[in-house]
Each structure stands twice: as structure tokens, then as C-alpha cells.
Image 1 (tube, one colour):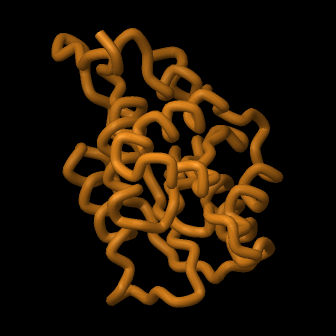
Image 2 (cartoon, rainbow, N blue to C red; image 1 turned 120 degrees about the vertical axis):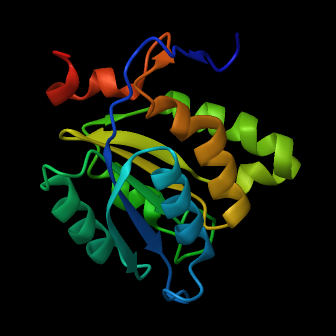
Length: 178
């Protein structure tokens, strides 16, 4: 079955997730993409451990990411924004410098999912994902629709320990022995 399936005979393992909105123009009252991700994370049974809005500045993005990568309560970072083609869109560059390993398959699947919603405009997105230390990082575009597609179709499934044939949980060293 494309996308795998959830094995209800397995136990669910909640993860600690942090959400980073990358924007020079958003604040807490206008961060609809961050709100959507926070709601999806908690509705899925995971713990929203932190949330931040960071300007379109590589050093600031990386500093916030390192704080969460170093935090043992944060297993996953989901960012929104900064993946486009303007000079200020530097999220992929900022995060890729932190990755120990990039999850190239995420980018491929992201474009397949995104194509169903926005057609060839998906080529303007540079969404990516990778692992930095023991933390999985997903870098999504800033639109609410893109965050919905990314979470609902890809990220939520990989963060569910019951997902078969496997989930990203099995790649996190602290969960391998379960």
C-alpha cells in the first residue's frame, strides 16, 4: 500500500517536537502555519516542546536549531518558511549545514505530494529534511497549505511509531532498543 499503514497492535511513542517559523513578517498572532503545525503535533499525540519565530537570518536560524538539537526533550524540529527562491529564503542552506545526513527521499516525496496541490509551482519550493545529531529536522514552506500537506501526507506518518514498514523513530539512537 503506498504510504504504508498504521499497525494498531504496536504501541504509540510520543515524541517531543519543536516548531520554528522563519519569517521577517510574522508574529504570534499571524503565524497560521505555526499554529497549524502545533495543532497537528498535539492532535497526533506528540508533545509540543517549543515554538519560536525566527527572522530570515542564517545565524539566528542555526542558533535556535542548535538549542533544540542539544535539548534531550526535542526529538524533532519542524520549520515553516524560508524555502522559496528570494534572496531572503535561506532555510535550506541554514539547516543543511547542520545535517549529519540528509533525507533525500523526503524532498522527492514532498514534490510528489505538493504537485497534487499546486502543480508545477512545487518547483519553487526547496523543502528538505535531515538528521542533526539525534534530532530529525523537516524544513517546510511557509504556506498553511504546504504545512498541511507536509504534515498530513509525510511527516505525521514517519513520526508515528506504529507506521509500517518503518518509521523515523527507528533511526533515532535513543529509540532503537525499544
